[in-house]
Length: 192
Image (tube, rainbow, N blue to C red; front, top):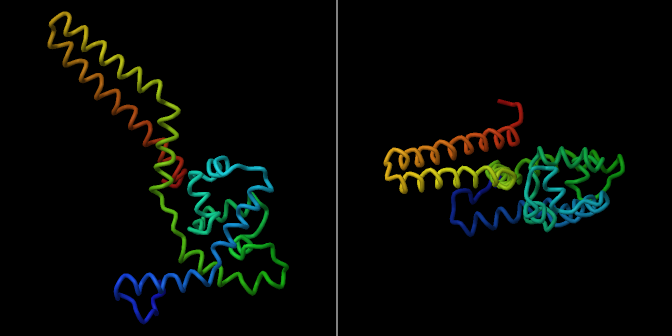
């Protein structure tokens, strides 16, 4: 919502209407169709394209159906991948040099304003991916803890029962720490 809006701070329906007016300036459906066209030219599925950008295929679908606009960092990646300018992506078509300058500033301003992708979605994607790749070790930790617990029950040793809980807590804590380290590297890179 622009800062110069007369209705700023009014009821939700008015805010929603103002947002719709602002979104119309940039044709999200046309942008989405152009992204889909570029993706298909590279013979990429939505899933593979999403993996390359670090998002889910659902996010790619939302972009291609015009529900959301990709954030600036993703637009930069798309520009390199598809060998088109960010301005062309935001215009929803390939542009001649004369058309380029006329739309560049307006499109950049709108892209920054409408960027709705957030880091949480990216983090959730990489957590899911990590869990999928490391499910075996998580199962082994659980089986190990259960085995120690059962042996403790058979031998009537409360020490082994306590050790089983300790193995489970430490093992899962260790794997969770490894997962978060992986996710942070994928989301933030070497910026930290």
